Amino acid sequence: MTDTPILVSTEGRVGLIRLNRPAQLNALNDALMDALGAALLAFDADPGVGAIVITGSDKAFAAGADIAAMADWDYMDVYQSAFITRNWEAIRQVRKPVLAAVAGFALGGGCELALACDIVVAAESARFALPEIKLAMLPGAGGTQRLPRAIGKAKAMDMCLSARMLDAQEADRYGLVSRVVPDAELLDRTLALAAQIASFSLPALMAIKESVNRAWESSLTEGILFERRELYARFASADAHEGMQAFLDKRKPAFQHR
Image 1 (cartoon, rainbow, N blue to C red):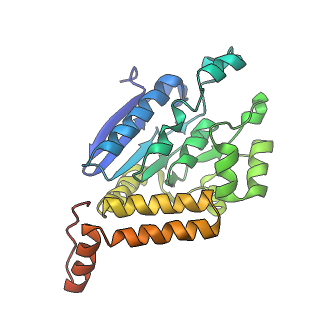
Image 2: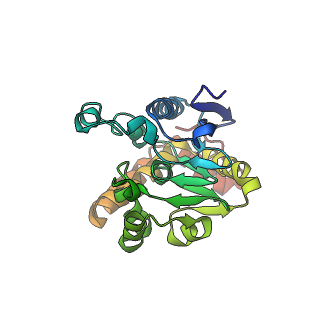
Image 3: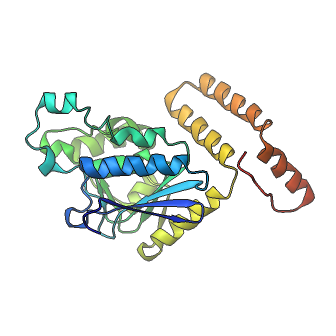
């Protein structure tokens, strides 16, 4: 078990990925990120999976990148190996909804991994920080880019420049997380949310995810145009017609994810 950097299972239409380096508080090394990327892409390609959950342990979602593994690297080591780009960025290719279930520490790369997910469910014990400045480094797995979009420039600057740590309630107020739940209920509540999401039409879920992400990355005019095209495309979907007819018939829709 401890030799496997992640544990993978399915719960109905939900794919579950558990980070599994407990002795290192799930520090994110190349082996773990390779395995995580492969699992995410495998679930994304699986027609039986409609949503994906990433979680860690009670003590740590992930306590950052594995410093011991990278302490002796030089510029050419990271440049030639496409450090981070090569495997951490796999999550950006995933079209299905990805949820993070976060308990304990989500520090550095762990916080950045959570930020890369579509929904973050935080246990009351969750703690979020980007402490790279303490090592004369910077958040380089999307932290300086995603955090301002999530919580605004002023608060992102505070976290990045001072290594400020947020508890779950602060993270909720800032907009870094989607909801906060009791620790004992974290995984069950996240899996239930993922199951609810996965019960909806997968093409519609993918269109919504792509549209919301477009709002982060383009102007309002371009985003509205993209949204409108995605809306029009729904009228070519069998699920959309089924959903509307089921509403008129006052029955539960039977989506075929087409």
